[in-house]
Amino acid sequence: MNENGLEALVFDVDGTLVDSERDGHRVAFNRAFEEAGLSDHWEVERYGDLLAVTGGERRINAYFEEQGMPEDEREELAGRLHARKTEIFTEMASRGEISPRPGVVELLGELEDAGVRLAVATTGTRTWVEPLLDRLFGIERFEVVVTSDEAPERKPDPSAFHL
Image (cartoon, rainbow, N blue to C red; front, side, top):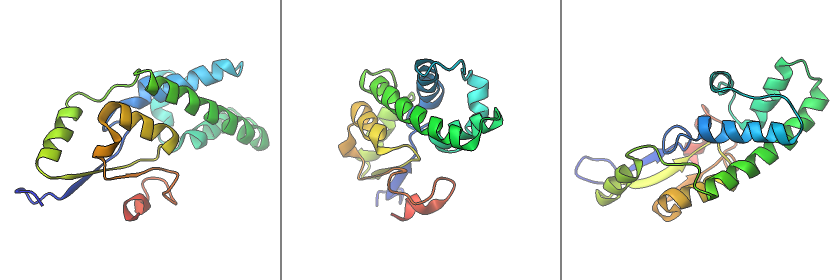
């Protein structure tokens, strides 16, 4: 415990450590739609509304449900699109197209210097979360990284914090 009594901090990724939704995931979704020959395109405002649904595949499924697509068709399409979106996003992250939020790198350094243990709990998948964290911050600085791959339920369920 440091002089302020703080032992550890758990960070989310999207919107906390990085602003990856608007200029990362949304862009990757749109590229996946285009590659699949779909005319769908999520503008910033529309994507903001869709963020009420947690999880990318569930978000795509909900979107196509709104569009009236039959369940069996949309579930197959959502799975395929989400897999490709994740590949695209991972490529974007590895090319440095996703940046930390201003001040985050400095904050993490100050917390480490103060002896605060750092962790991450996110609904993102380990496939893209670990490479992104490693490239931007160095994965080793986080004592624990919990992703949707390990947590039995998605936010706002607290199960990720019990692992």
